[in-house]
Amino acid sequence: MNRLSTETVISMINQISVLVCILLTVIVFIVAFQVKRRTQRIRYFLTCIAICLGGLMFQIGGYTLSGYVMYSLVSPMFTLYFIETERDEGQNWDGFFWMALHTLISVMIILLVAISRNGYLVSVSFLVQNIIIIIMLLISSKKLVESIGFLIATLFPIAAALTGMFFDDLRLHGVGLSMMLLIVFFGYQSDMERELLDKQVELSENKVSLLMEQIHPHFIYNALQQIALLSDEDPTAVKPAIYNFSAYLRKNFEALTNEKMIPFAQEMEHVDAYVALSKILPSRNFEIKKDFKVTDFRIPALTVQPLVENAIYYGIGMSKEGDVICIETREECGYIMVIVADDGHGGQTELTTQKKHKSVGTANVKTRLKILCDGEMNLNKSPEGTEAVIKIPADRARAVD
Image 1: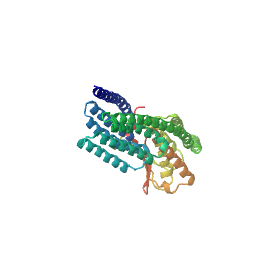
Image 2: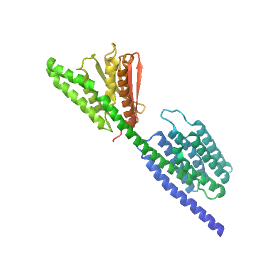
Image 3: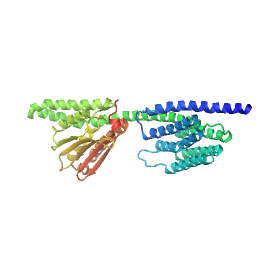
Image 4: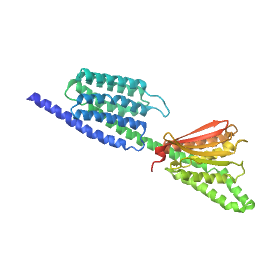
């Protein structure tokens, strides 16, 4: 009778704990799935959750051994999540060693389930798997303090494995993994909030630099002086010039207060105003060519205009060759591409102050792209001229604010 009562209690503990974990895991999966900017990191996490949930469903259906097989696959996928969390931007480290080691242990667990079905050995294998996770965290974490959450989370599957070693009827492996993933998700949310705050601070600092870079007095002085000269030489051109000058200033000030993406057409209005204003200044003649294969997207303000400015003054403007600036857009491999190319050779003739001005301008463009839409900008120089390429993920470029 006591034996029956003990088995009944253990069975109730198994069923209730699994049901609670299924509920929690489903909630976490739904919340994680609704993350708007779904990076590779969150995709790995969603896969971990889905695998764990599959194991819990097998276990609640009475297929405990099949559930163990699913649980064994969580650690290799969690390794990918950890690698994606720890790697630096642009780093190609793929954690092959850790991934191979966890996969090997997963295969061993599957073989134990299929051949011996020995609960004690399975629990020992799960214990080893989670101990290796702790070793991985200690060795591979960039900052151990920031991995404390990971370390605390792994205590739950370790406790579940130890329980399974001493009490074979208590099958809490899925419970331990669910609790681990729950804590990891809280850590992910904390990381996202911290990154958002850092980006807001960086964007605010960038605005000051952007203001000093875009509203440079020398250009304004020359523009006003040339408009004054136009009043004697060509009075009919004065009003359009003033309108262009006003539009140029207005777009700059609007961009400084705008922390959201703007339609590409709106950015091109700024470019057109700047080009029209530049053409009244004493400089080399140039031609703007446009080849827009896609226009239904959004882009951070003040990203194309500074590149066109560089092409005018530091591309064809600093060279005796070239007089064409091409602005092109296209969609390619899930990215929106905006290309500003000139056929000059300005990179070889710039003064030190001009190089500094140009580098600050491109640095501002890169910062705004990275913060506002996870985009990037690259400069490609060749004997034929300079090409600036903006690359924005298409889903971000078409996202509704």
